[in-house]
Image (cartoon, rainbow, N blue to C red):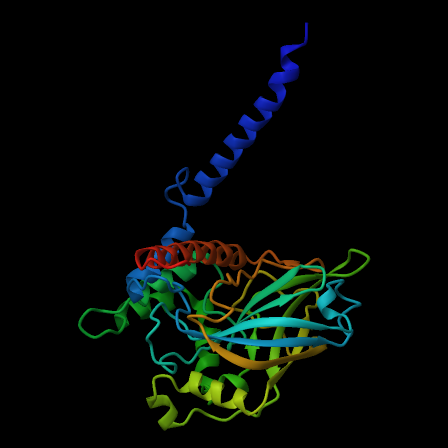
Length: 350
């Protein structure tokens, strides 16, 4: 007679796997740890701050898609086995955006700009990165970011944050000083195309021998810096219009640079810039050729999760990376379901 355990083991294994997945989901959503900060709480705070705008990203709601490519030059290949750093051309889909959850906000309402990119490698792997126009971030922990959202909540009467709450946040988070000082000393540029963008977080480059090299990256514009004019600042869509106009006359280019950490440089603190004398590798040229509205452009359905990485790049121990991944996933889930519901209500195919 067959041993009943022979048949029972697969069922037991499936049951255990299901229980593990359920427990993992419960942990991720906060059911098992109600006091733990969750992606849902972060996204809910964005919605409270900026209102609910169905079908849009909960942060960086206003943006424009761009299409182009990246030409690697092989200089970074000794440090990373990622194919993107070889001597080849990689197609890129990107998105320029401004901060916040309001898709109708003026382009220049915030001095910070963002650039997200998706590189699709020949072997099917993808590298997704979300960069800001500041070399450091305002906080170095997910809780600090949540606290910043709470302190920045607009008052009903003024539409601006409570100065006392904002000051209390800065007093409680002295690590934010570097970000505030940088923004004060660097007026925003006149265009997306003459803005430098930084990875903010650190990542590990992994070479062919399995050795890791802590690095941050940035893209440096070919176009020279020019300050934002009063006329452009007053126009609500000036950055998008400028981008479309410039790309209609020719592509915009940036150099991708990798900054390598040295012993003692923190990989888990996005508020601390590394010294400027650290080794820098010129890894290739990013070329953006065409802009498309986000409503029907190729970037609309991309979740620019910075932890989606090819072989040869992996996340550092920066706690913000996991928080970004979770919040981006929650935002993606909400907006895509809202888009599908809207199409269904209109009798359209999504």
